[in-house]
Amino acid sequence: MDVAKIQHQNPKANSEKAGTGMNKYTIVCALLASTNSILLGYDIGVMSGAVLYIKENLKITSTQVEVLVGTLNMFSLFGSLASGKTSDYIGRRYTIVLAACTFLIGALLMGLATSYLFLMAGRAVAGIGVGYALMIAPVYIAELSPAMNRGFLTSLPEVFITIGLLVGYIINYALSGLPPNINWRLMLELAAVPAVGIGLGVIAMPESPHWLVMKGKLSEAKQVLIRTSASEEEAQLRLEEISKAALALPPSTGPLTTHEDGRGAWKELLVHPSKPIRRMLIVVIGINFFMQASGNDAVVYYCPEVFKAAGIHSRKQLFGANVIRGLTKTSSVFLSASYLDRFGRRPLLLLGCAGLVISLAGLGLGSKFLEHSSTKPTWAIALCIMAVCADVSFFSIGLGPITWVYSSEIFPMRLRAQGSSLAISVNRLVSGVVSMTFLTIFNKITFGGMFFVLAGIMVVGTVFFYFFLPETKGKTLEEMGALFEDRDTSIANRVRELREM
Image 1 (tube, rainbow, N blue to C red):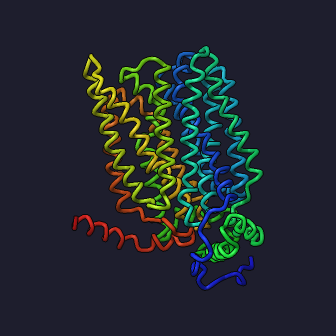
Image 2: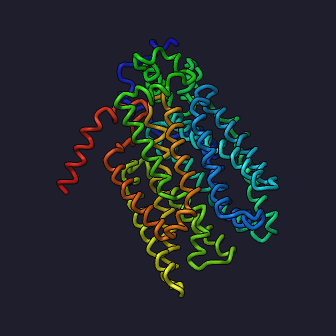
Image 3: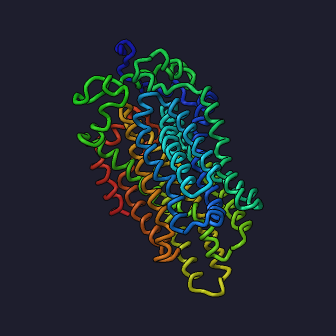
């Protein structure tokens, strides 16, 4: 690949003059890619209500409910692991299509299920599609976006997860009056609608310029950058940065061609990682672990059970409470996405995590009072409902959007797809474990005890984020490596700051 003639001594110089705004084409592409994430949100939202009717209609136990709910998350682990290699081989755009098609098949199977095992098979297929979608959407958007707007655009997948969640709640509420052998099938089958739309919409999307450069298609990459940049000068600067990064391979990895389809990436990530790569892995695996260890997915899946424990038994009321919670979550994630590029990742992440600690502790306190009271005091019920709304709000301000942003932006180009797929696999594994054990642990230590445990986990998470996560606001993808070159000094400085407080 001949890139010598387009190299530049300081491609970052005068970048302010090149423009930092977003054009409409970039926004449209980011929105189309993010639409893939609506699939997971819809499934989480609609399954929280559908599972009440599935349990009644198919006569399954609470343990089978746990396995059913967690199956999608566990199989999304396989989709996430495969997505890095796939997207390096066939490209980011066609991986988005593959994700939508796989989920479409799973949604149809779930809606047509006549038995528990049939339903499990459908969720397994849908889970693989979700795994692909969760990894590829943020990576594609990060590679398409200018540095100054990347936080907002890369957080859009979380916005669409939240929109999908809200749509799922609304569908639950709208279809709850139908016979129980019909309503849950319609709830699950309707997930096929956005999957079809995504498959058609991707036709208008370009390929990632980073992937095109890795394949040696410089002229195509430049055309994409011209369409997604504020000016032609900015597009040229971005192309120079990407091209230089493509050549900046460690000597041990060989020439660029060894990475064109992802070969050698796993070895560099896991077998012989450099210190910066090791630090990147610790950060990205840590944030994905704590995102799911916060218990947010489980709280969403089993929220009707929480509200029932709080004294709300009517299914219409349960679904209505879910809609209110969904609206709260949606407004919070929009707020966070709007300010990510203004305030930065770290402040919003730390704010969100501190809020989660307080919300989960409040939910645990309210649940404990309800467990030991026969009168179900109104203040305790109100505390539980407010705490659940606060929990999803603070999650949507911090961990929800920022996990996808960090996961897609900190790895170097040659490792981005497979590094992100490894991180999202951890995300899916922890989500599956939490979802499949939540009710079992609840039966042992009660809801109150469970929420106190989750609050303790988030205290540890907040400390981890404070010491290990650097600020990436305004940095180009090609500048990320420098942030992890001297992390020991940065951690020492933070310890000094704490001592001086």
